[in-house]
Length: 107
Image (tube, rainbow, N blue to C red; front, side):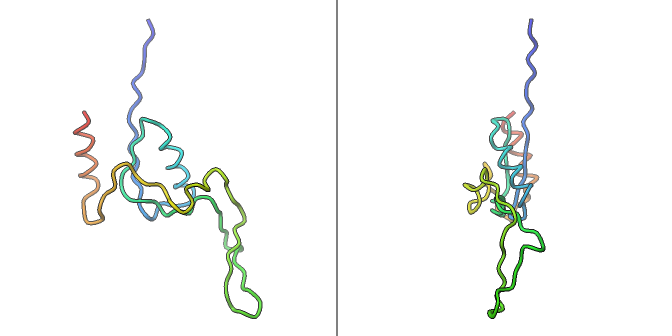
């Protein structure tokens, strides 16, 4: 007889400060059916990497240009959208209480 392990549900919390590699990780996690994300839309800065030396002052203008040193094509579709959680929450609410209530309702 085969034993089947029940896959636990993974709960992920994101907000507007979630960016870069954390945002890429959230995109990958959302591909699984046992992952639920909560919170607010992420920063939408996951496809391009900016390092401190990627900023250049344009000659004769004083304007600063940012030229990314790396682009990850896999994440381009989400670059300006960010990662949108399954249920989104308002900032003035207690997110932990809301998540606990959602988990309790699914049991």
